[in-house]
Length: 214
Ligand SMILES: Nc1nc2c(ncn2[C@@H]2O[C@H](COP(=O)(O)OP(=O)(O)O)[C@@H](O)[C@H]2O)c(=O)[nH]1
Ligand SMILES: [Mg+2]
Image (cartoon, rainbow, N blue to C red; front, side, top):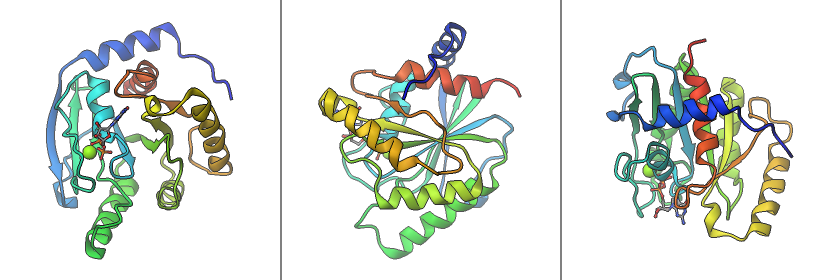
């Protein structure tokens, strides 16, 4: 599926915005800690280890802003970052970590569900999917939640550097198929590699547009 390329202006604004100062705001483990803010907000969600923190780091050109880790399921809080005093980025705790105890999963569900439903300024969710693994059942559960909360989510395939071009093409097709009929999904999938920089300027351009005043 072909989508129109972003305008030169959008690319330029994206490049500018993500080169600005980005600072860690806070980690939210309980709903009452959610900061009041009227900045537009973008959330990043996906299974543990899918590459959420790496993508935030790569987009903002930092190496250690959002902690990346090889231990899946470590982030059990929403980590919020303020970009250029214009946009909030929130790194959601990963879903679908098999070894997580039941009460942790329930806690996660409650936090995320309330966040997604109640966060007025949330403009989009970047829904990360590992390009080697594709959309899993647990992803579908979260998509269901987003559909019913009517929050627009855009699928971003991660770690594109880890598979061949032809395998990636296949995965893109399969993923579009998996998304058919979903209500709140954004029509375009973006392929990225935080390692190689693939797709990052496109993500920056799209997110920068959401930072513009409505
Ligand atoms: N090759 C490759 N590895 C990646 C990429 N993105 C993340 N990783 C690795 O995947 C692992 C998990 O990444 P992380 O960002 O911590 O995932 P999170 O749990 O979703 O925040 C780390 O070892 C990263 O170095 C990528 O684009 N390419
Ligand atoms: Mg992380």
